[in-house]
Amino acid sequence: MSEPTIAVTGVGFAYPDGTVALRDVDLHIHPGERVALLGPNGAGKTSLVLHLNGITLPQTGSVQVSGIPVTAETVGEIRRRVGLVFQDPDDQLFMPTVRRDVAFGPLNLGLDHEAVAGRVAAALAAVEITELADRPPNHLSLGQRRRAAIAGVLAMEPEIMVLDEPTSNLDPATRRELAALLLRLHVTLLVVTHDLPFALEVCERAVIIDHGAIVADGPTRRLLADGVLMAAHRLELPYGMALSGE
Image (cartoon, rainbow, N blue to C red; front, side, top):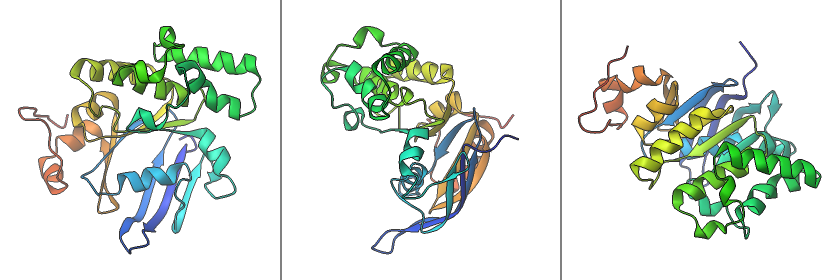
C-alpha cells in the first residue's frame, strides 16, 4: 500500500479548560481515497481537522502529511499540501473578484504570473465557474461561492482537500451538483459532514468519531447500515432511507 497522505498516530488534545477533545486518535488516509468523517456535535471532528494542517498541534502523538511531521517549523509546507475548505465560503473569499481570490494562494507561493494564471484557469474549469472569474464573490449564490472557495484550494494543488460541512444550507439541486463535482476531482478528500446520504454518495470509506475517539472505520454503506452503531453515536439516516450492508 502507498505511503499515507495523512497519518495521525496516538493524537491526544485537551483545551485549556480541561475539555478533552481527542483521545489517542489513529487515522491513515491514502492517496486517492474519499473519506467521510462522521460524528455527533461535539464529537471531536473539528478538533481533528484543525490538526491536519497545523492550525492546532497535538499535545500527544503525531500527525504526518506525506511523511512530513506537522510542527510549528513545517506548518507552511503542510498548509500547501492540505487544503481546508471552510463551512462558510465567506471565511475564505475576501478579494474583489473570484479570479483574484483563486490566485491569492499561488501568488503567495511565489509563482510567476504565467504559472498562477494557469493554475487559476485550471481550478476554475475544474469547478465549472470559469464564466464567473471576474465577478465579485458577494454577488454569487451560496453554491457558486462554495465552488469558488474549492477552486481557491485546488489552485494550491494540495495533496488532500478537507471540506467542512460542504452541503450546509445548499438546496437539493445544488447539493447534487456539488456531489457530482467532487466525484470528478482527482484529489484525495476528507469530508466532514452530518449529511449522511451525501457521505454515502461521495465517499467510499467513513470514519466515525465520538467523545474524541475513533469508534468505527470502514466502508460507508456498511457503517451507515449498522443501526446499533448509528444509534449508539447519535447518527440518523433521513426518514424512510434504509440501507443494507451489502
